[in-house]
Length: 284
Image: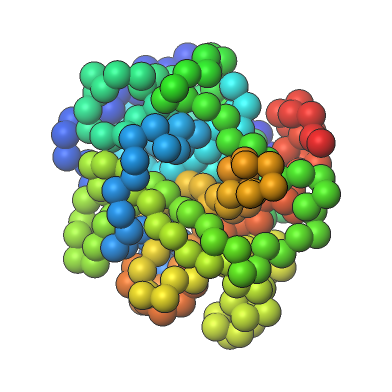
């Protein structure tokens, strides 16, 4: 069984030029879900064509939320399950922006805006611990692959048990770019980190983590921030010259964006069968 929600035809307008990084959760939940991309760098245009921006709300007049996501199929986006709730209430309006680079440029060449018609959260998602923090969003329309919109490859079946420790990774999003800033970044940013072992990560988080995570740590104490939630963590496979999705941004420590603690992502390879079952993606 899985939790799903189907949306009817919706008209969901974007906010104008200034958008606050609205909370998705209760204060207790946000203490762990304040994921970061502080002190990262501006991405090269079209270097992350799978990156998706997600606007969401409960009801017609509820507060607007913002998260990231990744296009894994022409009609499916993967994001964090906690991005589909506002104060423990499942959202009923989500709009996806694909092909974007400058978030507030509504007339940017190559971007598409499309409604989400179905949300499937992982059946074992635990909001208190953020275990199994994954959701799949079906777009109302299938996306055409272009220079600005493309699919990110999922891990290979042969990598189900890989830990990727020691490999370089990239996280990206429009999240808050520095401590003290209250608005999401107008331009897509990315951050480079090294994958660390779950044992190391769990020690730093005082053994509070699920085995279903993958962690990235920098040497300068920066990383993902509010608004980057749900976005991608990727690694580059030199053998096949492919970028693959290994993580979905989940949470960092409650002390804020710029800490010496790792960023924590949901480990995508553990969910390949579930992803395939819901989306029909053929695994290899």
